[in-house]
Length: 204
Image (tube, rainbow, N blue to C red; front, side):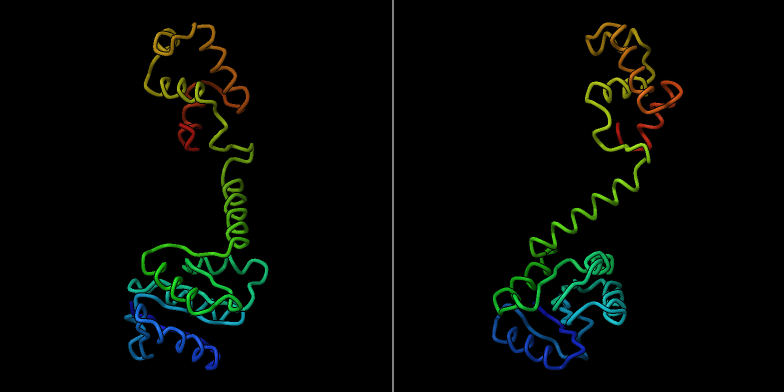
């Protein structure tokens, strides 16, 4: 597994390179061959604009996957590095030889690696993005019940109330009530509007 190590601080670089060179799983490339590496490790104290620029450059190199060994990640830095294509992060304080090799091998397999607290932070961020991107009325994938989604799907296939009732084994009154409840709750004009809305938001 070929690895390129990038570090602004030569002492940091030498430390990581020496650890990796002791292991048969990783072959550290010289700077001249760095662009051909399977894995690129960026070793830094923190993520500033220069580091982000390097990560963006590495992101465009389709031959390599990028991991980050970092001293501290300030507020918002995790989102920034993920947006730069980083799929694995290791804190410098935890970067012993075994963990470095594990990081490199995981990257080579296309796996992500994050400390537990950072994974929690990332999931919280993704959840907030999802809420912001979906409808301001609070649409989520659970906005419709299974029964509501099934009935709207049948409406989208052109079935009328009686046909939906036969297909679902509900009474026509129940079908009307369910569809009325959906259009009222989501503040929609009619069944066609409800179907279009549900399709746009991935609800059916």
